[in-house]
Image (tube, rainbow, N blue to C red):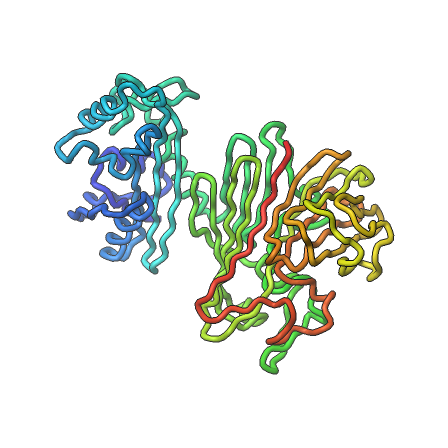
Length: 475
């Protein structure tokens, strides 16, 4: 694959070529392109896209541009996007880092981070941004003459060295640009993305834009479904229907359509739109397959954000059609459990009227074990049959899974948008599903899908709808 790097910075060119040995990489000089793109954006992302898009439109090629800089927290994140121009255009690298050291005199907080944002701009107009960050400290004096820019004064605690003393190989393992390049390679492989912090490692696949693994870094345990022999999924999105439509059939404008259980989105390949240090976004647009099941042009984006011990999931649906569009959407996340089901319980934020608001169980009967009114009640699981039930009209905005009265995971949801909250697991399985839904299970309703069905969401052309839930783990 041929990639043009939109830069005249020879230090960056060396790093990129060294890191991208499996690709045909060309600099602007290699292609006899003599142009300077004004970096007048307000963010690293804006600057990187502008540079790459300018060259891509000029050459008709895939172009990569990097905008990077140093953010010093005690200086309100300066020099930031102005890192290459800090102190004025007349200064060289040494002059800039000497000015920075002078500006930090007398300050005890010397924490900083390098930021690199890579923009990939394709000839077809697509733009993808990938962000990498590396945290460290600013020294009181330069050390080493390797690298470029602010490298001699950026101290990296894990290696106990400044970037100026690292070999190119060492720097390419841990630098902000290396981390952005890691995400770029995953993007080209179209396989997965990773988010990681001190507590959790989250892996997301392109199929269904679905979580693949969530790892507790303290012990290596998977916090979501590993029992894939019982069920093939970890956290599929349910879109544009929830549950199974009776006879897999519905009618729209007097035309018959067939649609799968929970819709088609979880079966489709999503594209990576953006990736930062703690967040990734995947997107699905209509396909020939989806249009046969659901005759609308649309965009579905799923954004995952890792914050501390919490995984946040945001769905955004956009109507790209010229007619009104209807749909439902919801999560189907699994949480790892053991098979001593009697030790698990569910706890709501507020007291709820459970049987009164229970919609459905697998045998179509209310489950007798449910109390009339409670904040906490036993989890209904079975080793010989699947059990599912849904609650509605909730007062709470979260529900918590407990084990031996100790919290395991708390699931937050948008109460005003959540028509039903589902609970389900396969018999004798090692996972339990908690499912916030903007809508109600199809089998629980008395009317078939039409243009005017209860609990459907409606979007006019160009309108958007968002729906959010998150899971906080007690590690």
